[in-house]
Length: 261
Figure 1: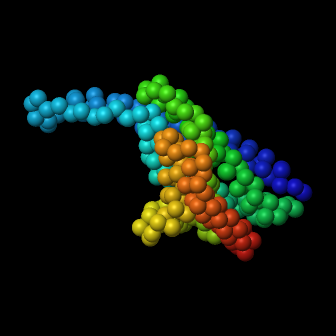
Figure 2: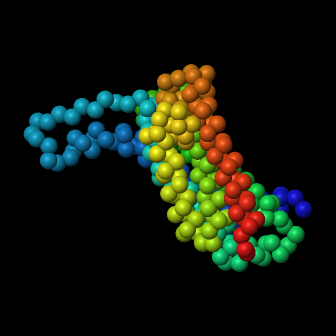
Figure 3: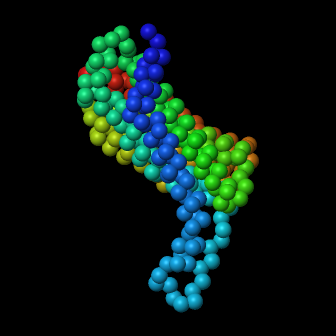
């Protein structure tokens, strides 16, 4: 038996639980608020109270690429939290409810079960990010001016492995823990550490960390680098994030194989 029926089952589950709609909508909402807020900021400050009479606040108008890159920066924290909430019960919740034991009664290996979960959430995450970025970039262009869409898509594709890492680490935690809350808490702590701590531990660790890959993606979107420069800048981070994805993917698989269900 191949893993295709399990993948179909997982996608059907996404449809039944409306996650296939919720995730893209949340991604869009998290990113599109940034260009809207940046556009309204001068008016908000001008109408704010408590300023001395005659005070004048001048805020330089940011370029469209700068606004879009800040949308990515804002998304990094909130988007990670949302992904963890969505994925944390994917395995742990089914173990606790007894669904997983019912699945394994059939001739389905734990490896195929785990792989189907990973493929489903990777696909949903990537599609949601591309949709969210497309809509946000479109409105950013309307509000702030032209964008180089080649830079936008390359920068987005450079950033997506970070989202895959969030999914992978959360699946790993979900395989290890017997409840979704424990899995979500462990994944949240780990991702906060791995995204923030390396920047304080030296240039090399910063470059190969998820934060380094995020910086390279934002540089690409800001059009501060050519494609060749972006590849050179982002390659260490991409290698580091790819390695972490592989390590935690197989750790999660191992935990699932060893767990009592």
